[in-house]
Image 1 (cartoon, one colour):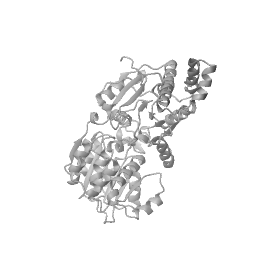
Image 2 (spheres, one colour):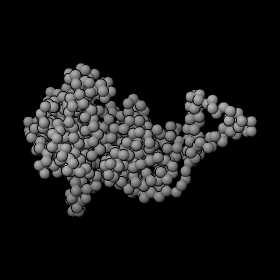
Image 3 (cartoon, one colour):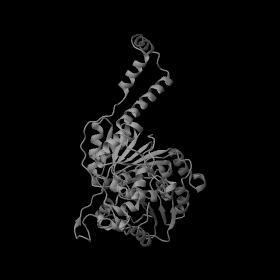
Image 4 (cartoon, helix red, strand yellow):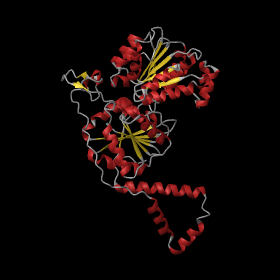
Length: 484
């Protein structure tokens, strides 16, 4: 319980206001160590409550009377930077702590003006933070706590050198906290170079959200994927669903095709303006759109409640991304459903994912058009039964009696079902085919060192040591089962 962690009354007030009741495993282990000023490595995925795990002790150590930046959080994407800053603001509400997010895509002059107002905590993406440091509009001389959030994702995006440059600007007498779902070699090197005898806190995947997610795979040809997706949407009638695509082009085409067939869908990826992305997320959270189509990077770190289904339209290129994807559902004690579409050539990737999650995925037979129609009919019948239970029918009784005088009851009900049922739409759509993931015969499919050019070549302008080519930086790059 939070009251057992020795927190201040102001902090307990904020925690109560946020609705937190019991500390998660990573919070219970991290908060006491951080309050004791220990350097710390937290190995945990999104969805474990790690923002509060580092945010609560960070806020506790901020002196609001000192008008300098005292804490800095480095995050891989602007979405995560915004989300972390919003949560830190809520945690620091009782102390009136000033938190400022800094990220690319926002007017830098506006950020400079905000920096002059002396925030206590900065949350930013590596590139924009370094930009301000080089402009001398951001000074970190008084920072006592530095936090690296989702360090492995920053490694994947080529930000390691930026992180090292940022840490070099912070006093060596500081506390450093590093959070990462995995611990590849370059991340371990950062820990060795910039941290002092760090304590390690691990939260295993089974303690995150995987255990509360039913996982299936559907073997399907690339050209049939979209029809299978829409039939599953018709059968399962998800309250809120996220569809993951491998590329930005895929996301754009999928969201457009879904709307063409009558679904309320919008896409989110790195090329959208910040205002557009925030608008899409707001509509999704409020239930004004049913399906969010996203790339891995755009959805990384988003905390969206109420997602019932996740559809991996394209299988991800690494198992960590798979865990992050399905972690969007199955939260707050509820069961989620995750379905992964896989072509025959990509089946070898399933076993690697299963080893990572320690769970077998059940095979699901692609549904037929008739099954999709049946699913829509069942959804309408449920709505009718709910309306009957609500018992607000007095104004409709007379019209119903008159109708039954003219037609038999079975015909009337059938007509109502036909009128209300969204029949499966077969409007032709055109999707650009994505090449299947490469078959790795000499190494494991997800061997990090076997990726094209290696991890270090993700940074803009890095050289592929095998080909000598320059690389540009692209951030987004069993038995059958009953349908539910």
